[in-house]
Structure formats: structure tokens, C-alpha cells
Picture 1: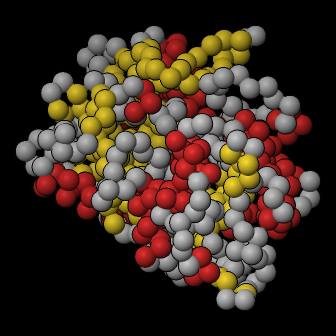
Picture 2: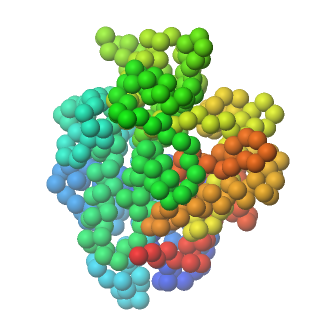
Picture 3: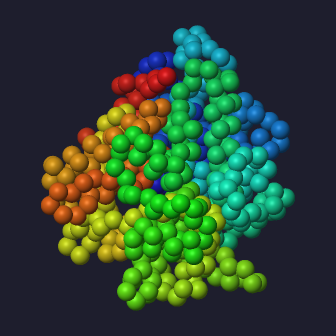
Length: 450
């Protein structure tokens, strides 16, 4: 039994639970995120969140039910978090499925937290299905992204690492967010989301997020401008030449964890080109499939780079200037800064000798003090991260990736806003882990935005 599991099964501290706002957590049960949040709540004496699994919710919808049906199943003890076979559920009395703020002195209107839907194959298939059947506007007008017919999505066999129809997946994810928001507010008109589903959809779309931040005067790397849509590799080369940009990042618009990120540069004198990325390619039965390699690859042949760029542009890509990041020794770095409730909390410096700094690529991580970042540098980082979070006034928490430019007068730029970016290991703020810190903030100051 792990320490986390032991903690989850130990008695809850005494607290006046009747005064607590119940928490409805929509996520994947028993993964590191859900268990981490439940452990944090137990440690500080809060009752457990009621877990509504994405898998149960999506299947309930597909069978004609509603979020109400799925929540009711959870209240009856089905589909909740289990640890070593033992249920870990919120008291049914804590969340009543009714439009009442108080029932017998108990606050029954939940705060709703949406967590990441990833790392669960059944959920991935359901989102692909939703993306195939949902009638929403395409992400990119006139472009032909890969599509999997609805009838095939639910029988797909998982090929580890393969990236399945990301445009279609994102359509499904957006439809899921919209329906959660609609049905939750229909049944609990006074309910609050920790992060508003509309905001999550924007944060997930790197193109819209950067436009949104720029419109709120938050510094972001310049986007590659073009008078015509960039539909493929040839359009990309033309736009780069016109703009005089020889180095760009091409990012899958709805990708996360460096999935679909390419650092691409051209030598304007020789025409040589190089693309550094986590994306692997393989030809199977005459068709190129794309997958996450879990390590960096370097492509230098035009045939490979053009296939990669054609795919990214068709699925939807954010294309921006590849700006020089500040460096420590031979490594460049950026910072993942957690912001919650308007406060800057945990921070991790991510260092790499490549342009891509994500930690799961075995890049080095340091605390800001260990990296030698001074107060002035961290003030720039935190001020910019808080400004980015403030651009989403209906959302409460995000892990925000910030870079400092090089030179004697560095400026902070926002690279990404991660609505589920609080899964940070081995870092504390005010003596608390990321989940404990956020739950403690909520206990001291319940979240109520309008």
C-alpha cells in the first residue's frame, strides 16, 4: 500500500463539514490527479470530493441520459473513487441533486472542478465519438483534417502513443465542456466552476488563447502573420519568407505535454531546414500515422518535414516566432508558474539543451532559488502569470508557462495557459503541495464569481 493510499484510508480530521461547500470533481477516478486532490482534502480535514468519472458521464450521454443521471449513480456509490476495493465517496447528504442552496443546514450547491480527461482510453474513444457526431463548426474552415467515422471510434484499439484525429478529438472535448456547463447550471443555477468550461476551451486552443491574451495586453510571442490561411508546408514556407521569420514554433493547436510541438528553422542562405519535435511518423499500409515518441527527434529531409507540417496545418496549428529564451549555462529555461485565487504559488524552472523544455522529456527541473533566479526575475514571471490568469476572470487556477527573453532587460512572455497544470511534484509553497495549497485557499475564501 502506498503512502497516498494509506492516507486516503485513515480517519478524516474533525471539521465542521456542514459549512463546507461540497466539491464535485469531474475527472478520471484513481489516477494521480484525482488521488492527489483527495489526499490533499483529507490532510487538511475536508470531506472528499464526489467524483464524476468522464467515462460514466460520456457513456450516459451516448445512451440518452443526462449529467443528472450520471451524478445520481455516483451518489448511489456507483462509479466513485475506490482505493484497494474500498469506496471513497462523499456523503450523499453533502451534494443533493436539487436546486437548493441549503438543505437542513447543509450547503448542497457544489463547486465544480473539471480535471484533465487524458490518460484514459475509454474516455479518448468517447470524445472521438462525440467529435464525429457533434454538429459544431470546424476548427479550420476549408481544411481537411483526419476523421474517424463515429461507428469506428468506439471499437478503436489503442496503439500506444498514436495521435488519433486531434481536430476531431478537440471538437468532442469542446462539445463535452459546453454540455457540462449547460446541464450543471440547469440543475444548480448557483453552482460555480473552479475554471469555467468556456475558458477551458479557450485555454486548450493555443491559437485562441494567444489571441485572447494579446487582446488583454499580456505579452505573448508574435504569431506568424499571413494574408492567406496557412494550409500546408508550402504555405508555411511562403509565410515565413514574407515575414522574414527563419525560426518558428509550430504547435498542434489542442496539443498538451509537447504533443505536436515542432521547433522549425530554415537557413536562408543555403535553404537547409531542420525540425525538432516529439512527433514520430510511420507509414502503415500506404498511410502516414503520427505518434508521440516520448523523446525528441530531428528531421532534416524535406519529404519528412513537409509531411509533418501538412498534417499539423490540416489539424490546426499555432505558428509563432521562435524566441530566444533566457539561459543558464548551456541550457535554456522557462518557468511553470501556478496561479490560484489571484495568487502566485508553486514554481518550477524547466531547463533543456533543446528548444523544448517539457519535463516528461527528462529535462532538468529546479526550484527558482536553485536556478539562481533573483527576486526581480521572479517578480516579472509572477506578475505576467497573474496578468494572464486575470484575463480569465471566470476561472480560478492554472499552471502558466512563462519564458524570459535573453539580454540585459529580459521581458516575460506567456507560452501556454494550462487549465490542468497543477500536477507538480516535489515542490511546496508555504509548506503545502499544489493541491493542499489550493484547497486551503478555497477553505479560507470560498470561490464565488459572477
